[in-house]
Image: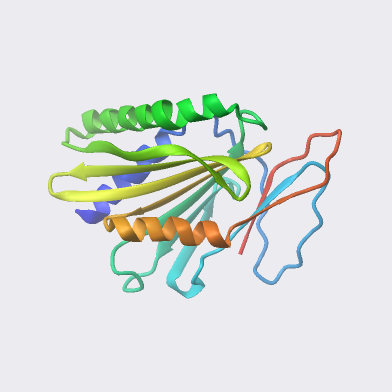
Length: 212
């Protein structure tokens, strides 16, 4: 049951994407690959697990979606951390618009996606917004959201961070039936993530993702 509600929560959060998540071209490099200099106007994101031996990682959709799953017996409860990379709807989000998105639009879209999922599955799944607000992460305007998904007696907590890094939007989701574990996972993956900005250019650059 825990695995089912976790999978449901992840599918709902992915469906409730908020601003456009159009895929951007990405590249992936092995751990020991030398760093490439950024092209003008580009954003490069480096993701890795804080404790690599504990995690399995998979890449999807031309490396624009990266999924980390804690290995069996390596975590006290099931845990998944997902990175999604896409084009930002704007390079400079308006503070008031971002606040409205954080406090109204994103929670509403998550609840709507959950309700649609409930109808399709003929189940009793519910989504409850625990917290949703603006923040500054890695020096960029961001949104932090916590949603609890419930089904029968099972619960899954999903911590979501959306970072608007220039032309790139990075969405990170940490999910677990263990609320403290989901929060810890988001914090630890954010801590080791790096976002590097190339020099200014008159020609718009292509956001890229690099993982280790």
